[in-house]
Image 1: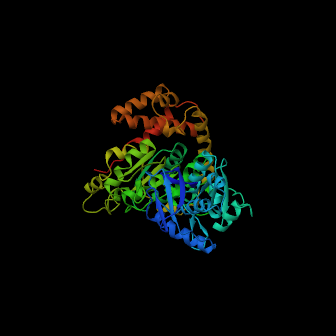
Image 2: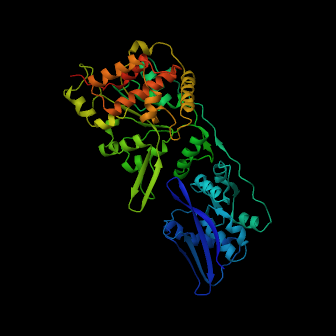
Image 3: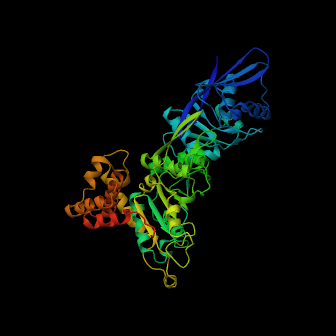
Length: 504
């Protein structure tokens, strides 16, 4: 009789159940793994044999075959080790076969039998809960997997502990959920001198998840402002924390074994490749856009990014997910992020200062910002110029609202949006509203409507631009605790929408 147990194979953030079958039959002594394994899975036989040898368990002089079903699903990674060892122990009648069949095992084996932590424990626990099976994993992964409350997760340090558990000698402890503590940020919005308009734009962006583009000379505070955006964002909701942590689990970023309630803030360098930004590489891993899911993606020096990389952002910005298509994998990852971009007005950065501008001004500004396509710029809800800070402002004491004060207003605005869209699955905030729903919740008063029509005709706003103005106006009204979108809200939204012009 063939013994079997279960593990998982990953397709994006989803974990698909894999049945691990073991047959020990007469024949030339061998140990084979079939079922489309990659190199790491094929090498599991050596790790399993060494671990069993460390426990003084000898394999019979027979043919051992491990089949990973479904056989047409690619199997990648070292987390198959524990399941292979468990199926083999069940086939040798060392472990009860019924108990092995009710288990989803995940873990890499060291040569001495220790269980090494692996990636993906959180999505694996979801798959185990859906199949109504017990999950056994390395103890270091237990705090992460235990966040799936519907799953029964057991943690072990060695293969010997797993064996003694199944033979009734010990009982493995049930894993308890851990949480990464929210670090206290030393970056406060009040530290930014001047730039009141930029601070206001940052607050609106945080309240409605509106994409923000800042253009200004070097040292005007663009990066400083962006770095303070996480301090005014509300913590992740439980559902958002689970979604984000599943992606980070696959990427190996849950270093403390628990789920973080802090929104991610990703800031890739402008030399990052397309695979690093969008996702791909070996196994079609998640990229920066997915690692920033439910958080912030900050692209500093936006025109310096390769043009093909920037153009690939257009579809994820609109849809909220990205399909990583490779020859051997087609994987979909969520990527609902807040995009913040910063750019200098030209290569030298001093286009507006005739005394410091280079000899190519003003044409260099058009060439430099021209690296960013119009369709991509059109996807930024908020666009503003960040002027240089006067030296007199730098001498002034800190003033204005603190990050905590702004965060309270942002949280209140997001709470209003959450209640507004309770009956609309998939819509979490104003940035997600579209079609008839947007027209219903963001319809301005008569004066606001007249202003928006005039602006749309005068500046030839695209349909996308028109609707994005409505979304921003709705968020500004939420910050004002207003049930209706009125003329001042539309006027402020329009002010952030007008194209950034370079001096002629």
